[in-house]
Length: 70
Image 1 (tube, rainbow, N blue to C red):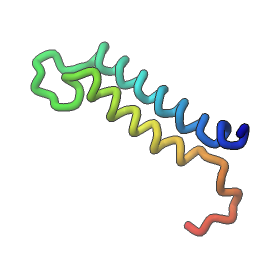
Image 2 (image 1 turned 90 degrees about the horizontal axis):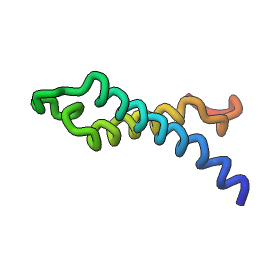
Image 3 (image 1 turned 180 degrees about the vertical axis):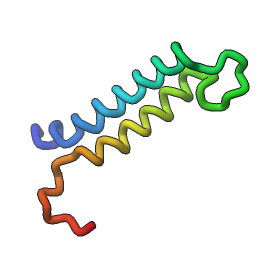
């Protein structure tokens, strides 16, 4: 059970962190006119940056200990 928790903790934290960064970006920089498709809506901004955080979590994972074929 603990190994599954440790496996999913990093992607979860990266996704939540990305969503929070997206909300901060929307709040401080977002599009005020509504013409920007991503940054005009805070939910869409959080979803896109959360997905980017999830993808970034794969770069920092420790599953591959030098035995991966890249």
